[in-house]
Length: 232
Ligand code: CTP
Ligand code: CA
Image 1 (cartoon, helix red, strand yellow):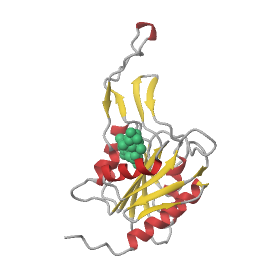
Image 2 (cartoon, helix red, strand yellow):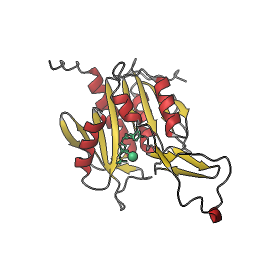
Image 3 (tube, protein in one colour):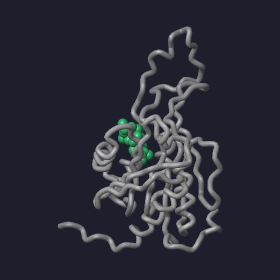
Image 4 (tube, protein in one colour):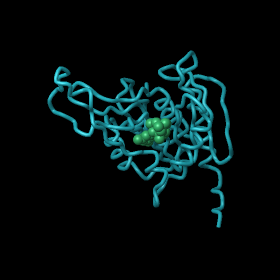
């Protein structure tokens, strides 16, 4: 799958991308999921590959084909995504674009729940593993650069920066998903702000493919830069 490796600044680097939603089954016909088209994650995987990286994309169900030259590992649930990510480590950089369902039904029933029996009005939930946090807080073998995403509707920068600190990732790519003309959900355009220790960098609205190209270049620059001296 990696025969088409491009020459570029990420040659010799292994990068992991998570993309798409996860689906958490309630019964054979119903599920809980977050809204995600997978477009931004797939575009980022393609852009990283175009800069020469060996790219593994762990993706939930999206219905879009994997970019050529990218290894796609297909999963459905958050727990499957966590296991697939752990299997692909170590990597130089991890970019977590997936819209992971925060909770799953505690019990998945083999038999369809019948609504007239009231079984759908109270579904006990269990919290899913936080994939970004797990990778960002690894004691050994942590990727040199861990990038998370934050889709927010209000106080976008405040929430996204709090999330960056809480999860321990290096960068957070924040975007506004309030309902309205500029909502990135499912669209081909996105306006993002990148938060890091260096502060915030806002990019104007542009095609998701262009957000991906810019982000891939920024990742290549960061991985090429000499590592900052560890504070004593
Ligand atoms: N993420 C993850 N695993 C989870 C939940 C989130 O890897 N179980 C990652 C997403 O891929 C994204 C980042 O964490 O990169 C932020 O996800 P988000 O849903 O915004 O954060 P949460 O901590 O779940 O907070 P909330 O949904 O309450 O805003
Ligand atoms: Ca969430």
